[in-house]
Amino acid sequence: MRIIGVFLLGLMMVTLCVMSGCTNNNSKSPAQADSDGDGHPDAVDAFPHNSTEWADSDGDGVGDNTDAFPHDANETRDSDGDGVGDHVDAFPYDANETEDTDGDGVGDTADAFPNNPAEWQDTDGDGVGDNADYYPNDPTRWEQPATDPFLQLAEPYLNMVSVDDATLQFYADSIVNGIDGKECQVNALYRDVLMNYTCLAGHLGSRPLQTPHETIQGRQGTCEDLSILLCSLLNNIDIESWLVFTESHVYVLVSGVNTDDLWECAEQSLRHQAEESFGEPLQQEYADTYMLPSRNMLYVGGEIDQTFDDIIDYMSIDYRIQSDQPLHLFVVPTQREFFALRDGDLANFTHYAKWEVVNLTNAEGSIPQLYTYGGIILLNNETMTATVHVDFSFSFQPLFYQTYNLQALTTYRLGSSYAVLLDPSLGSYGFPGYDAGISGEKTAISPLTHEYVTLQ
Image (tube, rainbow, N blue to C red):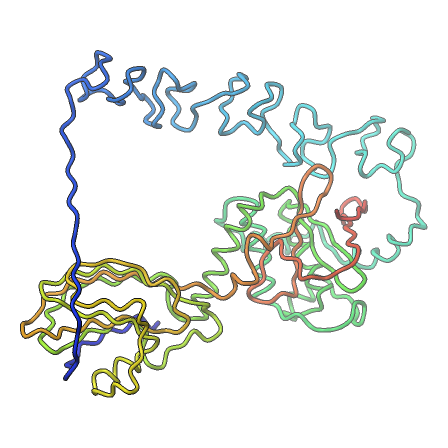
């Protein structure tokens, strides 16, 4: 892996202007013996400036007098007074509910199906939830008519989905092993399909459908095949997923996920992918001390042959510099400018004038956006050697943020919860919840119950 290059070379005949910097010093006054007058000396008062608090038994930053759970560092409030702290209470303002096992937004106490995110009510008491029950007020009937045209269309796909397969369960478990949280497990399985399987082009239905095992063996398939595989893997580790159909495409859908948590997992994966493609960390720190002789200069930045290669959008540089001799700071677009300055080729020396600093001794600042892999030059044009302390932070913004970001994450309504699509055709920078702009009605169908809904 290449890292930020550093070069120290001599320079001839460069004329400089004069600027100066300064630093600030702050001091604090000593604390009083009992600042808040609550009778508890500051030395033992956990809140020396709050006369209503002096102890924090669980060390959570909330005083015992205010803390509803003074001996539990994970809890401080119980808004509904049900004895369960707000932090773990799925319904902190409803004293009748504390848990939502299936994440459908209906508490377990009121939920007729507490382990099924697609169901929560059974009006006729026939054991079939109202969403799947085509006759929710008739306990003697519930099945959808067999002649339903959409079921006939979806049946070949549903027949290929394997929801109880020991081999697929082992495969999925090996991918999510050690990964906590439903959202991160969903992302891990989705990323595995994106990164390790080739999506074959073709119109919907143009190729015979593959079983999940055939797709795994060949490591390729159409969007239908990859969706069938992904849907099977998710269901085999008890993450209920659906197939989604449009006139031209097949997706996978997962409901009951927290979109912020899902994006956080996806973003980390995408940044890791960008680092692997770029060959460098997206965040790089560089700190050192140099003896910089007279008429010499220091360059910190990208090397002459390094580019962003359609992986990085731009980079930012934060710097802090201290020197006992005045220096001249240039920000340059590439390392070529460093060599031009070194060789006295001022006709080919370019730099960003708005960030130029002369007579620098103590300074800090930020270079917000550089769209080429350049860097910073420090020049000592004085007659004495300079002792220079530098602290640089290089931050690289991956290009994928222009297309794949939290604002582009699309959610759909499924019952009382929100659902996201997993499109297996997006490639290595795809993320869960990104709808690739495919228009038309989207219909989701469960391989477990064969119930289907139009996504809203």
